[in-house]
Image (tube, rainbow, N blue to C red; front, side, top):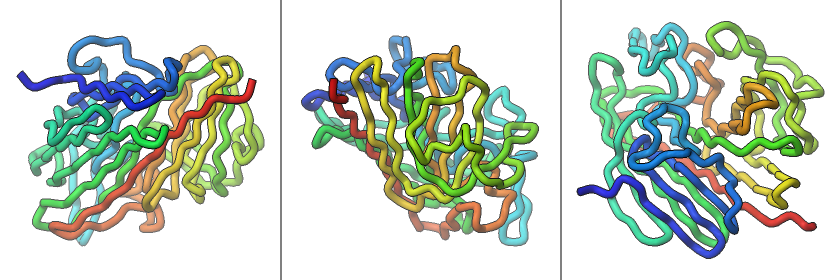
Length: 293
C-alpha cells in the first residue's frame, strides 16, 4: 500500500507531507508550529484549502468567467470547487505519486492530462526538503500540451495567527478587491495594509494582491518566541494576503509568479508562456528562527 503521509525530520524541523494535494499538513520548529497544522489522520483532510500549505499549479487564485483568450483562441475551464471560478489550478485537488523519499526529503509528481474541464496538460515535480534549518518547497512544471499555454506557479501556506502576529513584506503596488474575489484596480498601498514596516495584521477582512514584491517576507509570533524568514526564488513579483478577521487562527501569505486573474489581464500580470516540452521552476524557502527573549 502506498504511504499517504510522509514524515520528514531534520534537526529542529519536523514536516508532515501528504500525497493528497501534494500538500503539507504540519510544519514545526522545536515543536512550535510555523504553519497552521491540519487536524487530520490518513490522507490529508480532504477539505480543500484546509491543509497547512499546498502548491499552486498551473496557476494560482481565480480565472474570471472560467475562460481566457490566448494565441488567437478562446479557452474554457470548468469550476473545480464550490467557488464559481476555477480556483488554484489542479495540483491541490489531486493525488501525487512518490518519486523518492528519505528522512529529510521527498519528491512528488503529478501528471495532468488535457480534458473537457481544462486545456492544460503538464507534468509537475515537487521537492520538499529539510536542510540547513530551512524548509524548501520547489516546483517544476513542464508543458506537455502540443500548444503553447500561459503558466504560473505559487504556494499557498497557512500561517498561525495570534494577537501579536506581525508581518513585513515590501511591495510597491496594491490591488483592491472586487466582486468574485478578483483584483479590481491598482493603487497606492493603504497605510494600514502597508507592510514595508513590520506591523500586526488589521482585524478585518483582507484578500488583496500586491506586486512589485522583493520576494522576501518576515513574520514573527512574539507569544511563541518564533520568527520566520520567507524567500521566494524564481520570477516572483506578487503575493496575496488572505485573512478573514482577527478571530481566525490563521492568515495566508501566498507567493505567486502572477496576479490573480492574470489570464484576463495584460502580459505584465506575470504568466509565462511555455511551449511544448518547456518548463518553469520556482521555490520557496521558509527559515524559522528563535526570537530573542
